[in-house]
Length: 402
Image (tube, rainbow, N blue to C red; front, side, top):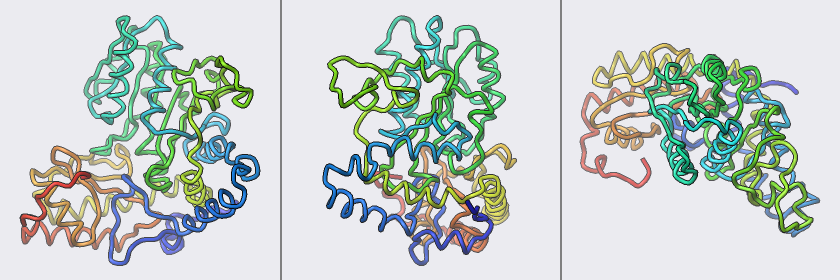
C-alpha cells in the first residue's frame, strides 16, 4: 500500500469536502466529510440495503463490519488486528472496559482517574460504582498526581490520553508501567489521540482502551466507537453488557449467554451499518497515511498558530502545555469572554469551539489544514481581538452546542 505524505497538503486536502471560505480548526470535535463518503453511503443504501434487503448481512458483509473495520483502526493505535472491535458509543465502551477491568482485579475497589478526564468517562465510573456498591469508589486527583496516587487499593487507572480542554498529553508508556508495578490495570480513552498522533497500545502493555471515530478519523456524526482488549485478557473478560451479538453463537438463539471469542464478546447491539459505511470511506484515506509524518506536520502547524496568537493576541492566555511534545493536536487559550470570541471567529469563517468555563479550542489536522489556513486564522483572530467585534450582542447568545 502506498502511503500519502501528510505534508503534501494539496493531495490530502483534495480528499475532503470543505466549504468555500472556511478555515476548519475543529476536526478534534467533528472531522469534515471525506469526498468519497456520500457515494459509499449511497451505494450501501441502494445496492446493499435496497437491492439485497436482509441478504446484505451476508452478501455485503454487514455482520463482519465491526471486526473488519476494527482491524483497520488497530494499525492507527498500535494494537493487534484481532484486538479491536467497533460498535455502540464511546461511553458504552468505557463502561464495558471499566467493568471488565474491575472483574479482572477483584481484590481491589478503587478506580483512579484525574480531574482532566472527559466528564462522560467519570459519569460512567460513578454509575458503575453506585451499581456495584461493595466499597467500590472513584478517586479523582490532579493530572500531575496520578503516579503518586497509584497504591495497593487501585484496581484500574482510567485516563484520557489527551485532555479534551487543554490538549495536555499523558505519557501512556510511563503511567501504564507505574500502574502495573502497583498491581493496577489500565484503561485509556483515545478520543483525542486516535488519528492525531502515534499510539502504541501493544508496546505500552495497555490493558483496555476505547475511542471514537467521528473526530480525527472522520467517520461522521454518530460514528461508532471502538474498544481494545489486550489479547492476554480477551479470553477472561466477563462482559457487563452481555448483548446478543457478543454471544458465541447469536443465531443459535440460546436462552442463556455464552461469550464469544476474544474481543468479539464485547459487541453488544446491531452494527450501525450506514455509519460504518461512512467510516469505511474515511479509513480508505487513513490506510494511506503515515502517522509519524502526520504528527510532525501537526506540531509544525500548531506551533505556528500558538506563536502567532501569543504575539498578536496577548489577551489570550495559553491553556495548553507550551512544549509540543506534551500536548496532542490542539492548542487552547483562556479568556473570560471565550464563548463570544469563538462565535465572532466562526462568523468570520474560522471554526474552532468553546469549552466551559473559558477555553477557546483549536484543532490542527494536516490532512486538510496547511500553513496558509493557520496564518489566515491568526490574522482574523487578531482582528477580532483588536477591534473588539466579539463584544456584539449576537455573539454572547449561547447555543445548545458550544
